[in-house]
Amino acid sequence: MAQRARWTECGLLLVLAFAASTYAAPSLDIKGKSCVYKGLEYLNEDTWFPLENNNCLQCQCKNGDVKCQFIECDKFGKFVRFTLI
Image 1: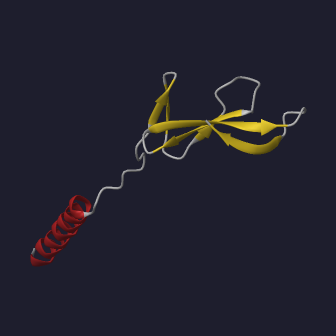
Image 2 (image 1 turned 180 degrees about the vertical axis):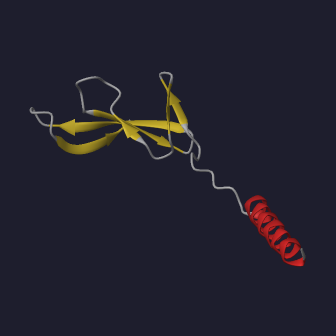
C-alpha cells in the first residue's frame, strides 16, 4: 500500500510541475500585430499583391499598418525595382 501512495505522490508532483511550468512560461504572441486589408487578415511581415493579375503593386503588413508600394515592372511584368508610395 505504501508503494501505491508513493506512485500517486510522484504522479501528482509531475502534474503540478507541468501545470506550474505551463502557467509560468511567457506566452508567445505568434501573430504579432496583424493587419486587415479588404476584410482579410494578414500577419506581421506578410506580403501580398492586392491587384488580381498584376504583380506590380505589393503590400506588406508592418506592425499593424499596411504599407503598399509600386514595383517597377518591365513590359513582361517582371520586377525591375521598388518605388515607395
